[in-house]
Image (cartoon, rainbow, N blue to C red):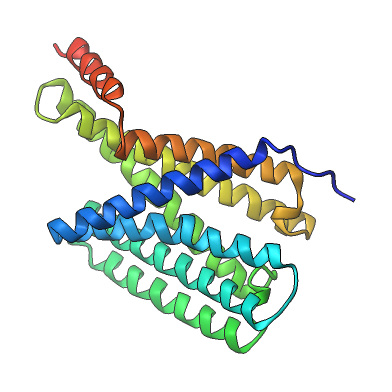
Length: 251
């Protein structure tokens, strides 16, 4: 029988849940005022993959029994994560490559793939078996990890471009730093999911039943939470520090 995880493991999960919830809601409120797609997509992405999907899955797991209510919770979690993944892909496409026809097709294909897996899960194994290792699970988790790591790579690439412009006074250092932080946060979330999925497939045990995987996911969640907090809710001391460092690096 596996050892129980250390209580400190839950710190990372709680931090990720709270920060992602606050950031996601704030972004949706901002999108309501600005009527702009990027804020809406990233807010939906953060909430869907983060606190909404994660929250429904945790509650479903804690029930420990298969029932119609259990299936409803798991199905809602699946739907939230699917919406979050699709919104993150739309954000990556519209912000970084808005004229790309190939990425437009990719986003449509991902939406269609999620619709197919959702219908299959509901009519086949059932939503309560959302964590069962079958083609639907593999496809869903691959799309989730891919969306997070792609978003991370794009943010870090854009940070590199913005950093060169910042050095000559053509870009805001605080905005530039946000791309770095978003790249770190999305990357940490994606790597946490990748480690957990690899362990589940290799060991044939649900990731939440493996203590070291819980510890890894908690650590990645803590990094993601800290990066999101500094990117979207930065303390004034952090903002001043970023500006001072940019001024010191200027030619």
